[in-house]
Image (tube, rainbow, N blue to C red; front, side):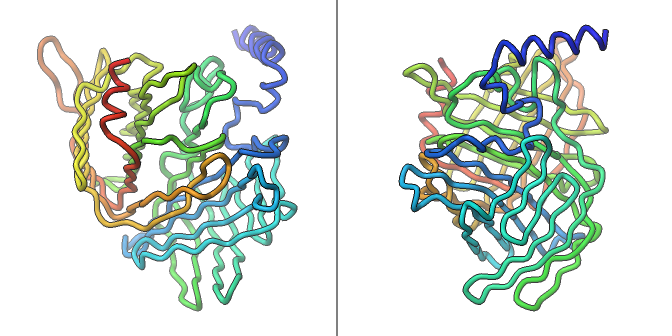
Amino acid sequence: MREKAGIIHKILKTALLPYMMLDIWNPGIFHGRKKKKNFFEGWYFKMVDRSEKHAYAIIPGVSTARDTLKSHAFVMFMDARARIMRYFRYPLDELKASDKKFELTIGESSFSIGGMSLNLEQGGDLITARISFKDTYPWPVKLLSPGVMGWYAFVPGMECYHGILSMDHALEGFIEADGTRTDITGGRGYIEKDWGVSMPSSWIWMQTNHFDREGVSLSGSIAKIPWFGSYFTGYIFGFLYDKKLYKFTTYSGAKITGLDVTDDNIQIRLENKAYRLDIDADRSEGVELPAPKLGEMTAKVNESLSSSINVVLLKKSGSGTELIYSGMGRNAGLEFVGDVEELIEGLKK
């Protein structure tokens, strides 16, 4: 069986070359080596310390614009509690990235699935960190479903591709910003990434892995997906509980049967044949971050890392339901960008 799968894997890779030279079965690697314009790629690390008094988002990445003078590598540093964002810009030649495994260096800072080392200094800002990640839990990569995007990962020329490198993991180490050191040993982390031309014009994104017990995590997004001259609304939600990942995605046949969005609250109901997931997210004030548009970091997104998300997972049983889990997720990341009516209309397509 394993030998047969290996043969199919080789046939698929051969048939889809040269696009498959990007190796979509490894979403963590650098996909932009041959991209010279209108391209971005960014890795997103969320970290919350054990006391939950400190929350950070660190985003290394690359922006290749049509105007080559605007192309650059970067490391974004967000201190959510202090509501501070710092953007460290580097020439493209200071980006070193593997297209074989997730290993990335920008300037004197390095990133991998095992941890990061920060040495950031520009304009008087000084940030250092030495952090290890333990027991990471990636979204499973399978032969015909290479990660969180499922079979959509095989479609060339999409506006944006997405990967989840760890739904939840433990942290060891420290972050020191302007002389103040924070011990984050015992905290929890999360890692994802995006790459492509632009982020969607409309999207909702949420994530939390701070529930009443370790090992519980929610990650989800709803977005406008351009598609052959039109668009549809795509969605990817995963809920990790008791070492099992419950998936509610467009490509798996799950449906959004309820969506209600206000300025400070988002309610979503997702269903597949076996399960129902109810989400009630309260949004807190966030920090404005740069976001990519046609490869350039000219768009803006407001991101909160102190929101709360109530999650209820139910198993369908006959005409009723059986409760599997109910709990409130703290320190939640939450973004809402664009037109919700556009998203609702796209669900009808």
